[in-house]
Length: 142
Image (cartoon, rainbow, N blue to C red; front, side, top):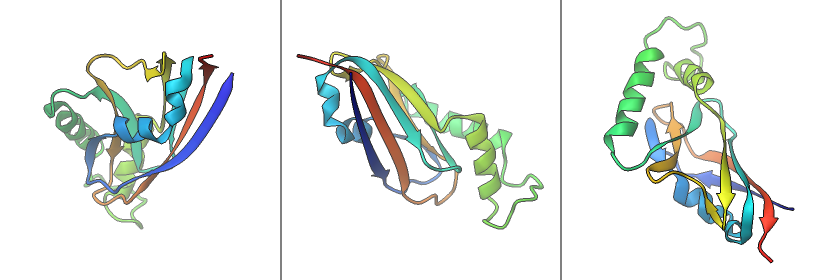
C-alpha cells in the first residue's frame, strides 16, 4: 500500500458551487498508478464545503446554492457577526454539508458516476483562496 498527500490551493470563487474535479485530480499524478484505493479530499476552512453532485446541468449547482441560501439566510439574527453578515450563515452551511469527501479509486481513476463531479461550495461572497489536502492511499500497479 502506498500513501501520497498534497496540499493544493484553489482560486477564489464567488458564492456558489464550483466544479474542482480537474484541479484535484491534477494535483495527485500518482493517482494513475493506483490499481485500487481511496482518495480523501479535505477542505481546511469553516466557511466553504465540498460536495459530490451532478456536473452536467449547470442549473443543479445554482439550485443547490439557492436552497442552502434559503435554509441559512444572511438576514437571520445571528450573534456571531464580527466577520460580516455572510460569515455565520457560511458556518451553518458548512455544518449542514461536508468539509471532506472520500472517493474510491480503481485502475488509476476516481470511481465517480457518469454525471458526478467534485464541487467546492463557496458560502461567502468573497471567501478567498481555499486550501485543500488531498490524501491518496492504495495498491499500486506493478
